[in-house]
Length: 142
Image (cartoon, rainbow, N blue to C red):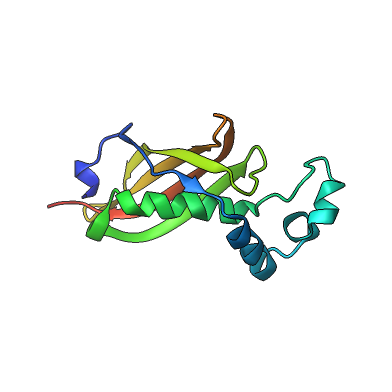
């Protein structure tokens, strides 16, 4: 969709994202290799009591579901920024439920504008585990 076709507050529910333990450990071994993500015996000694998923991996699992609904399609010119906040740990076999909302629309010039998309992700118990705010540059329909 073009910038001028988008509506502030438009929200969609994303498909659930399941955190697979093997994928979680593989991701951690490659990108975030710390014992809290990779060593089950160590993780038992932490306040979490078991392995937790790398935060970026949790975000990417949800982001992959967002890309299936992709608000912009071919009208996307570029990503501008992403800010992620993690509130609670995500564990293996958790299911993340998320909503994506157009949270800000800022015209930039006659050709494009900046669209802010906020994603809130909750675990299977309804606990907010992460929020991301992504800005994208989107074409304006002439």
